Image 1 (spheres, helix red, strand yellow):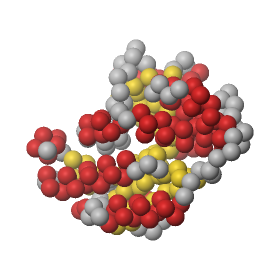
Image 2 (image 1 turned 180 degrees about the horizontal axis):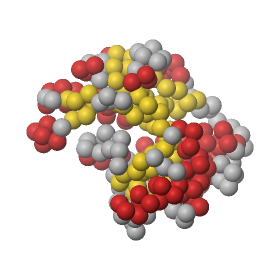
Image 3 (image 1 turned 180 degrees about the vertical axis):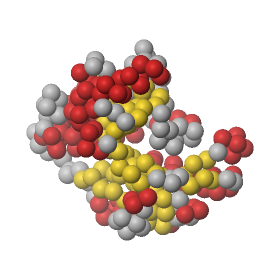
Image 4 (image 1 turned 90 degrees about the vertical axis):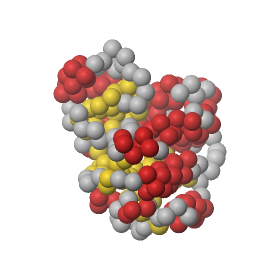
Length: 250
């Protein structure tokens, strides 16, 4: 087990915000539209779309919302063009951040993210300024309450995943693989009868930065929360780790 998900210790800070279904639905809508745009509207031939729809269903997203997002991606419905963009920057104590967004206005998005960084002890960098500190990997999430650590390990080996760990939600397991193996591993898990609820590329910090005091931890987590809560944000990756003893003091 890799422990690649450095956020498991601080996810509690996001529980209230992530409970806002409007935000969750917006993210799934963007992901479904982008998946349909890049790979077509047939879930049998588009594993990214299939995973996005399964995740949306698991979050109780209405069927009409899902169908509308698919049709936007395939061009059956008119709407603003959604673009995928990646921004990089630094936070307090030299922490590194990668922010992946889906937006219909890149100028507005860039300006607003720059403001979030600058007002919270950081600054936005140029493309590549922090990406070299991360490794790109594939992540597939499944929900299966019957899995335990031994059976998950066997499943990972059978499906070609390099690593695995328990997810944040009950019955959720996360399988990690090389970036070029993402679709293969996802398909293998589906063929094994597992309910794939998400598949995406992730950025994993090579050398995490330990935060050893409450003041800095508070500042770093505030910046992370603001970036993650930004309307166009799809994913936020960073390289900070906060010790349990610091979290307890917070």
